[in-house]
Amino acid sequence: MRRALIVGIDEYPRSPLRGCVNDATEISRLLKTHQDGAPNFDCQILTSPPFAVTRAILKGKIEDY
Image 1 (cartoon, rainbow, N blue to C red):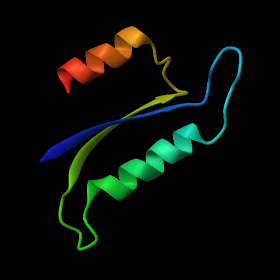
Image 2 (image 1 turned 180 degrees about the vertical axis):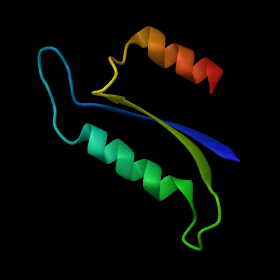
Image 3 (image 1 turned 30 degrees about the vertical axis):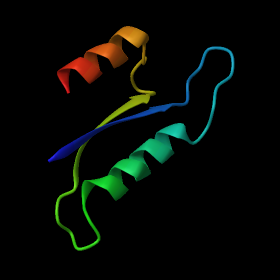
C-alpha cells in the first residue's frame, strides 16, 4: 500500500494561518480510498495544533514512516 504523510500547520508564531489543518484532514480522507472504496493510501496526519511541528519531528516522521 502507498503511504502519505500529510502535514497541516495553522499555528505559526508570526503569521498564523487558518484552514491548513482542515485541508490536511480533507486530503487524507480523499487519499485513503479509491472512489469504489478500495484502499489507496495509508495516511498519517501531522497537524499544528495539537502538536508543535518542528523540523526534527518532521524528519523523524519521514524516517519512521
